[in-house]
Length: 219
Length: 219
DNA sequence: ATTTATTTTTAGATTTGTCTAAATTTTAAT
DNA sequence: ATTAAAATTTAGACAAATCTAAAAATAAAT
Ligand SMILES: [Mn+2]
Ligand SMILES: [Mn+2]
Ligand SMILES: [Mn+2]
Ligand SMILES: [Mn+2]
Image (cartoon, rainbow over all chains, first blue to last red):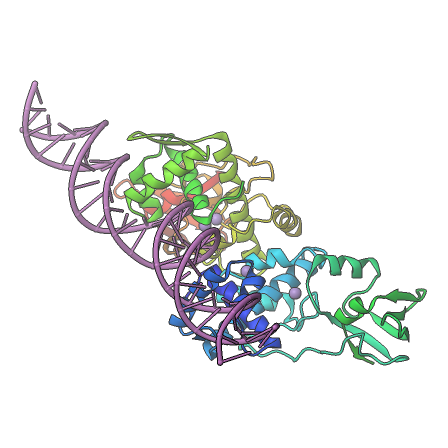
């Protein structure tokens, strides 16, 4: 089967929303994809026809195994291209998302297998998100945020909670990226802000909101 | 302005046909793009609205300067991606055309400039076709075919007349590619076939039809 | 338990890109 | 100069993907 760019974007969005909430609703999708609810309903019916999801009117949708497989193959392409753009073409990590959003729809499977090999079979994209292998398997992503880390603990940054360029720019400016090692010095009860120390740098302050979107692994 | 994949494919096809025949007709385009003449007429009117070409009903079309500029930007992308696929991803030269046909529609100009730099600013694609620079300039391509070469002359292969995989496979099998040095030993008056010698290989015979599609430069 | 608000779906319209069948124009042949 | 053939355009239809406005279903509030 071959699917359109629009269909693939819907499947990917449903997959993403399904991660936090099993049942995905029309309005959630409408917000995620910047389309009107009426258009979403239309598309859901078509995708249901194509057996990519189960559609129960008024109750929302769930991907079928086939739908999940398709979602993972698109995510795989998206993340491999992002890795390529950053590692080979020297793009900044906050500039690659939109380009990968187009590249992910190029259809050749052979292209992706060779790209994967060329890149050395990377395990994660520039934002720390795991890259599914050709069978759709991927390492489960860390869900410990800096907000949840205990005071005094040392950790390494493994990912970010969202892809917005405002977040990525802020992190770049503070010299925080994937792999950055840090130590949580203090957490203020008043506003949830945290003081962290990076190697060879003075202590800096991060807001609670920012701490929430930074994913870490203790070391 | 941003154009659809369909529009870009029309503009590219018109550019190609315009190389051998100034005025491009509906039927020529219909054959080139595998669409019905009625569909072509429709699209030509739209492209004319968008000032990409001059459309005279029943007489055919010619690209405007704007249309030519667009055509060259798509050709630039197509050929850079082909070069990438062969040089970096180790694709065979007869397998890259269809993939580049999709990649050429990815819209980011930044992507193409960085890809160009990453590839080392190549001058020609894997089939010997010149790659336009970011301003649309490119070196004029050799138009001397093996059929026109005089007996006894030494030459180097600079390109091929068409991109069909049947041609490319045949050339691969006979160890002929871009840059191959050869000497024209004999031409048979009966059928126009030629005998050529490649370095360290026995003399081989090529049909007139094949000799016609192999472009060379004397050395 | 009604009423009100929110969510979702339906109905009808629009744009893009394609098709078939019929009409028109241009070109070629008698 | 007519007539026949070929090329091109027009007319009308369709699928995909979107929209707005209205109707229907579900959820929340009184
Ligand atoms: Mn996308
Ligand atoms: Mn990413
Ligand atoms: Mn194309
Ligand atoms: Mn080529």
